[in-house]
Image (cartoon, rainbow, N blue to C red; front, side, top):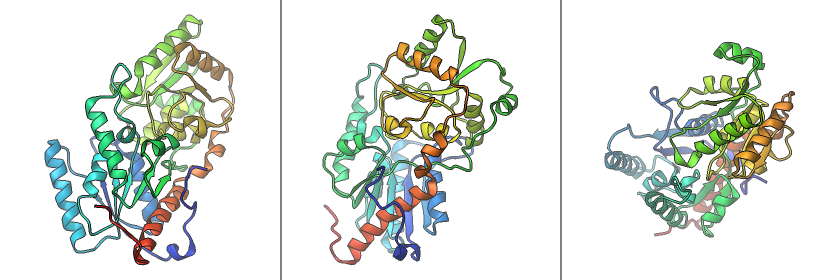
Length: 351
């Protein structure tokens, strides 16, 4: 099971339109269309399910000013009781959501906020350790916690009312496109092997050097392949990159539930990943996909095997339970649970 919450909303909640104040520091903008796309997808799915959502996303600027602005907005907007739920995304912004005590808080943690921020040597940064400690403390002072994987749940150190709900996938957007068509649109060589790295190579946690080392091992094996970085692109462009590639490679030190894996599987494209987050659970036994150790030779061998798998994978059919509308139902079920508890006078706000 991927969630401790109910998969679908019960009949009583279908007729209710909850008002949710969403607080986040990452959200797609015109200048950065790739940031926080999974949060926007969840917002869109909640709205489609009948939930009223207002978003607090401070404009880029000095960190202290962004937090001060968000805290002020949260306090003023909840003061009059216009919202049923305040829902924060990522550690510091969940803390911002908790800076009021009139409205129940749902805290969604994404990965590094609970697991720590990785440094070049694979350890945790001082700042990342501080954020993780604050996040774990916060898990016991909100009304419900949403995490992306079992590993994150363990990191929450026994918090109550915690639910494992991975981010959903927009199956209309992330869909199979003929490889030749996608490559023609991008101007790629039709006969070359391409391996997609779908993260920011400058983010230490994504461990880009390991992906490079895996490609170097492929070359030593006599297999010519090109590592393509897709970072900072609109989602519609990412879909083309996925479908034009022979495989996705994921080499991160830590993850919660990496969206890039699920989105690639929705395109029926092979995934070769290290064993991180919930990847092994998501991939399961999907033919053409592989989960390896953090070893360049193992990754290269898996990629070479993937290149021999010329048929599309069946990844899309294996992750239908992660359809964004189903995941929205799970999130709404969490809202329903804490609001029902509040209405029945057993709702407790922890000081």
